[in-house]
Length: 175
Image: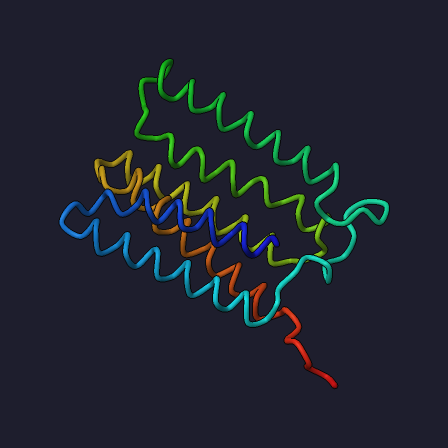
């Protein structure tokens, strides 16, 4: 389940990043769709389900209360920070980097909730990409404000999803 969520959010980031290259937006969005379809086929073939993940709280599965609290905090931070950046600081171009930073930080508690270091690596990658977008965007590289969070966020999320799919048990394996 968590890998599928990563695939879909990766697709959204890629879709946004594609707008930074106007001459190739259509091709890049087509590639986005192809990547998502490839992941869908892969998920179907391995029968990926969240049932094999360790429980997050009292046997209710990893998508329990702690997961929900983390997601609510992330969404609140995204909304509040986006308003401050857009209205108070008049830097709406920095919003994608802020969103990517919030998304990256929200993966830190998932290390404990899901019991996988993969989430620490993903958190670090997304936060570093957000910081790089701010540095490059702040030095006049306008493409970096959306291009780095868009393409970088997508690739990081897809890499984490692929790692999750690779770790998934294949039907009939070990029999």
